[in-house]
Every structure is written in C-alpha cells, then in structure tokens.
Length: 493
Image (tube, rainbow, N blue to C red):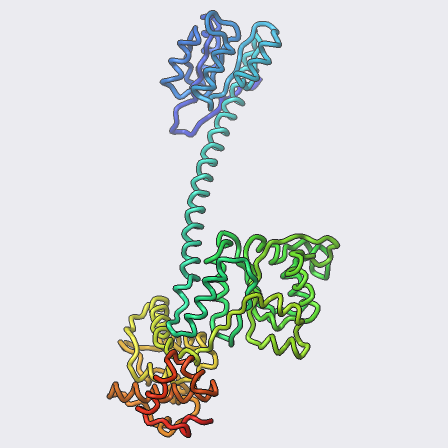
C-alpha cells in the first residue's frame, strides 16, 4: 500500500500543530508515533492541561478522548470551540454511546469521531482531510476579511462620489445673480422639498438638466437613483422599451428580460428630457404612470407599481402644442404641476461675466492651462453676443479659446471666434452701432447700458416689463434713459 502523505503547508511555514488529549499514555504514544513524522504533536492527559497548551500554541487540529476523568471529552471540545473556534475537532471513542456522540457533534461541533482501535492509514487520511478543511477555513476567513475591507472601501468611495455628485449638482453650481435666476432658485428650493412633478422649460442649452439634478439632490430622494432619458434620441418603440423594460421575446433581438428606467429609478427620480418630442402612444403610457404609478413592460400582461418622481423638460411651448393638438392636454397638465422656466442667456446678460470665469476655471483645470481672465473688451463681446445656444454655447466657446490659447495670461478679443468678435447687440439704437470704448471704462459701461435698455424694451414691449427684466424700478429706468440720451424713438421697434 502506498504511503499516505500528510497535509502540507507552504515550504517556509512550520508543520501543522495537533493537540491530542487522552488519559491513557499508550494512546498518546501511539498517536504521536503515527502522526509525529508529518506534524508537530502536543499531548495532554487532562482537559485542563490541554486548554493550557491551546492558549499558547497555534493548534490546527484537536483530538480528544470521549471518556476522561474530570473534564469529559465533550466538555473539553465545547471549551475548545470557545477558545479557538477555528481549530478542527475530532473525537476518539472506545464504545458506541450514540447519545454522547450526538452531543459531541452538536455541542463540540466535531469534524469526525474515530473508533478505537483505529487503522493507522485511515487515521492519517482523516487527519489529512481535517487539516485541509482547516486550511480552507483560514483561506475563507482571509477572503471574507478582504471582502469586508473592499466593501467598506467601496462604501467610502460611494459616499465620496455621492458628496461629489451632490456638490456638482447643487444650487451653488448653477451660476446666476440676475433677478431672473434668483426667481428660478426660489422655486427650485421650494419644490425640491416635495415630490411634486416638475416641468422645466427653456431654450436649448439653458441648463435644464442641471436644474433637474439639483432638485433631485436637494430633495428627500437624494439617496436613491437619478436616471435621465432624452425622449427625442430614440424612436418610439425603443423609447418604450428603454423606459418600461421588456420581456424576453417581446421583439426581435429581445433575448432576455430587461428592466426599464422607471423600474431602475424606483424610489428616486426620472428625468425625461425633450418630453415634447414623444409620440401620442408614448404620451398615453406616460400619463398612466403619472395617474396610477404603474408600468407594464413590453411583451408582459402584468403591471408593476413604481414610486418615481418625474421631472420633465422641453424647449417647446407645450401649452401651445397642447392647444393645437400636437401634445396631449391631460399629460401637459399632469407634468405641469410646477413649471420652472429657465431664462435664456440673453435675458440675463449680467450673469455672463460670472459664467465666463466659471467656465474658464473649469477649462483651465481640465486642460492644464493657467489663463487668469478676460480683457474688458472680450467681456464686452460676450455680453453683446446673441448666444442662441445659451450657456452651453458660452461654455463651448471658452473651451475652444482655452484649447487654442498659447502663453497668454488674459483672453483678448482676437482670441474669440469671428462671429463673437464682431458681435453687436440685437437692434441698434441711435448709438448702438458704435463699438464699445475699450480704454474708457465709464464710456464702455454707458454703451453697454444703452444696448441692454434698448433690447429689454424691444423684447418685452413696455418700459414697465423692461424695468422688471433689468431688475430696476421704472422711475430709475426713465432717469437712466434721460441721462444716456435715449428717446422713445430710439427704443421703438
């Protein structure tokens, strides 16, 4: 019969330690003779002596006799469980007292019991398997500890990322000191505390998505998911699958069940951008979610309840679209529980300098540049330009400028795009065609004021509304027009 090799540790580690406890010296000698060539053997004739050895040695396997004077084998193994739960426990028994064996298995949690007299080779096999189990338990414990550490690190990273997301999409990250933006902030702060459905309207590039995210992260659902979908980016069938999910086989290519964004966002917020682009069929399904809080995946006959806050956005006039039958009126009013209109950049020109510096800081950091600011003339061009693409266009322009900059410390007019270098305000008054005077600050400010007043009155249609837009009393507007030499003819369309 081939010799049975014992359980091996790494080459630089000590052999496994085995503790044998039996009141018969002959048994101890026999076990030491059988196992001593492969392992370190410690022996004791009483349970108390065995516990002393266990306290000072790293013991992998404990073998104890069932019947001993004083502390019995079962009692001893129960103490071993308390002192060193990782140790594998085996019991020697000279008779078939099954009730005692059952107790040893339950209370002492023994790995295996060995009947006297034993077969040496069988004993070696049992010991080898027991020590392999001990090694596996140790590896599992190390893996569990590493997994716990990794999970804690992941939780810490998630907390950090959440704080970063909340900071990035906080109200403070939306730049705007103008009266128009202050009114937007007031509504955002109030609605963020509720679960009300919100419709965010405004031209393309005004930052509707930032407003939606800020509302979510300032509200009670901040710990749950925020998911976004551009409704104009997908055809109706794909959009339905994306929002509501589908069952396997619902259509060609549906090889597995898929959760929709409404289900993924359960408990959180879903942002439906460009809601005005949806088709009538999709509008009906969205109406059902708003009314009943239920979705039905494509290919399924079952509905599912979802608890989702809806924030929608559009660059269309949905009221007009509903009146003309291009958008469901009932859906419009369901979405428009609270409407937040984001003003165009033309309506809040006084925010342009602050926005420009904000985007310059971001571009500097991203591209490793150190441009300090803008010349007065460059800021004048920014303020005068129409910005049909709004904040997004301004950000893109500054990114372009920083990317193409050399070693300049300030962004000058010559560094701007050609269409911005030649920017003139919409509608020219008697003096609106004259360039901003770059070397006379007072003259430059007066020129800018003339342009803003002319534009505000022409766009709003009255001096009262123009004064509101400019954030000044009507009397102050009239006094300013008189000082600047502006007449009613100058500001008429």
